[in-house]
Image 1 (cartoon, helix red, strand yellow):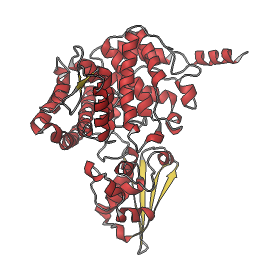
Image 2 (cartoon, rainbow, N blue to C red; image 1 turned 30 degrees about the horizontal axis):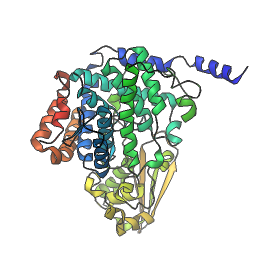
Image 3 (spheres, helix red, strand yellow; image 1 turned 90 degrees about the vertical axis):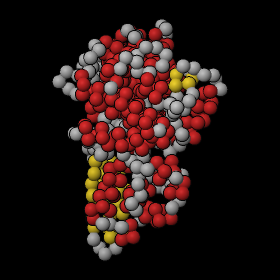
Amino acid sequence: MGRAEIDSQRTESLGTPTKDLAAWAVSAGPGSFGGTAHDWAADAILDWFAVTLAGSREPLSLMLAETAREEGTGPARLVGRKDALSPLNAALVNGAASHALDYDDVNSRMMGHPTVPLVPALLAIADTMPVSGPEFLDAFVVGYETEILAAEMIGYSHYDRGWHTTATIGTLGAAAASARLLGLDAEQAAHALGLAVAQAAGLKSMFGTMSKPFQVGKAASNGLLAARLALKGMTSRTDALECAQGLAATQSDGFTPIEISPGGNNSYAVEGNLFKYHAACYLTHSPIEAARELRRERGISPEAIERLTIEVNKNSLTVCNIERPETGLQVKFSLRHTVAMALNGLDTADLGAYTDEIAQDAGLRDLGRRTVVVGIEDDSRTMGRVRAELKDGTVVEETRDVGVPAADQPAQRARLLEKFGILGAPVLGATRADELAGRIFTLADLEDASVLSVLAQPD
């Protein structure tokens, strides 16, 4: 038996998960997702606008917008700027802007940021054709679910090998969401996922640089492109996830097919969304929370610490363990520095806290030199423990895990509204920001979803 026959038999044993996922994405009936999934989707969309409005002012966003404008304008609006570009370029710029601050939501099942590749593609479509609020929400839930299921089928090894899941798997999510909104049939949607796989790229080695958000912008744009091309008849492998030399075979240690039957008695993946309340890599958040507790409840000051130990899941060491950050952007990926900031009482939710000056701060660097980061085996990839050995011989520690979805969704929404006001109002003004938030929360009743991009531009 030859290698080709072996590969063929192996692929046949996996079933047709790519086709099944594509068929579900475009055929799940309108209104089948329920109010709870829509409520969580609205929270995610609100958070997306918050971080994108603030991110639209970042140098990366300005560079991309200026470069894209050189190719001409178009009908798709940019968030936070009085500009409109082609749909693909708008998705690129808005997608990169939304990830520029690394302040956007996450999902631990995906090991990535699920919302940032989706909303830019959907907004670009809504600016070019009639899209209702319910259609927008349904497409978002579909794209989100696609990301989570695809990520689980190829496994954590994809991320552990160095792939930036938000950029790779995010491309598939953007393609699925776009395919639904553009009205593709099941066969076309399967080709769209194949075309998305053909473009899926992004490396964790780029973390701490402008390339990280750029990769996410490409995921949004490439996913939209995949769906548009499939609609016109372009073909691809319709088993691109599971086939020999496909996504899993080349970018992970294996493939585990999952039955595509979201909903029913199970919650949708979006209902497990996790939001960020510190403007740094999510894998720093549990140690930050533990450090804040040591300072707030135990009264621990940096001067009293002889030695500090930060314990995290060993996989975090390849993501956010920059030992001596030189720039504000690198600070976001430094466990030592962000924990030092928390122990010194600095506001890690403040966008202005991540500066080059903070990276060079002598006191923070001194505590960093007294800190050791240890990677441990743990079932949770988001856990964090901070242990302080004090100069008087006392040892105190705190453990936190931010990877648990909120049980109180109204309280979560209130916290997100506060974040939205802080990030969005300086760009839009308080009145316009409030109006945008109100429209997001009433998306299920809106006839025209393009009002979101209209309100997301300054007067």
